[in-house]
Length: 137
Image (cartoon, rainbow, N blue to C red):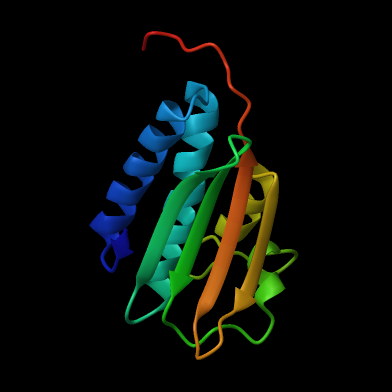
């Protein structure tokens, strides 16, 4: 899904949650997927001028994969995305909390980030598909 505006991040999170539910994840695990997609999509809107894309797919019936690609400048130290604020003072008015990358790391089983050749950043995360009994809600 192309993400350029804040509403796109909301739609992407909703679609990610639905995809996770359809893939067999519990409501709680699907909500975690929605948080991951929301954080990645929100970063696309907040930190790049051109936005980017978020993709969600199943891999080998064992993983639910999430990838965010942007067209921004990249990062000099991409791994810092997952550190959160780590001792830095609280955000100034208008700033985000800076904890989205750390949340992505906590809510997935594997995550990596890298600068893309030609510019931009790629974040790839995956969550093990633990198929759980579905409740009818």
